[in-house]
Image 1 (cartoon, rainbow, N blue to C red):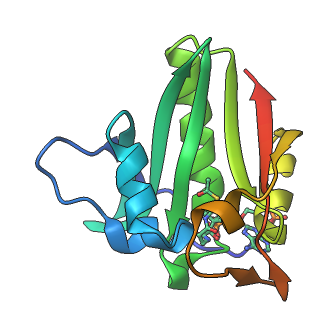
Image 2 (cartoon, protein in one colour):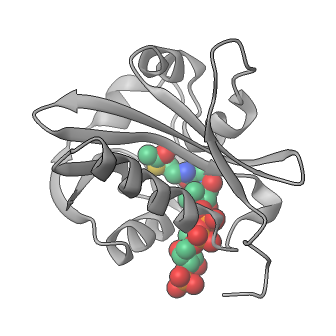
Length: 158
Ligand code: ACO
């Protein structure tokens, strides 16, 4: 990990009326329609540094003591510096405060770095939503030279 300063990062939930950080949300999910579909029953959180939004995360309680990270994204130029890990640590803390028992996250079969990060943070593969991306997204998505077809679901026990 680089020596990027994380100490002055602040984390807060986005209040009603505040601008939705779509440019960040779209980094994690290329479909605005899909994003708008899950924002309703969710809470948006942001990480800021020096008054600038550097990352965002969307949490949605799903019932049965389960909460999902529906979207997580860091400004492209600041990726790989620990902000994603910081956001997930905050998600875990919020979920524990909400007395949730499980936290889950889904990512594409092609999202190799994300699968690494989530497993490193204690999430374990729980299942696969087969053809989730091919069924729900108009455009084909490629990452790391692999087509994003399936959603890999990972769960962490809190
Ligand atoms: N490729 C390779 N390694 C990665 C990647 C990646 N894409 N992302 C994170 N890592 C590794 C880092 O190297 C680091 O490893 P280390 O602890 O061994 O040094 C570790 O994961 C922690 O990385 P962070 O610096 O905390 O991650 P970052 O700040 O970049 O945030 C995130 C991760 C949110 C995935 C960010 O890269 C991003 O915004 N990517 C584009 C959007 C995206 O793919 N979002 C997730 C989609 S799934 C969903 O939203 C539910």
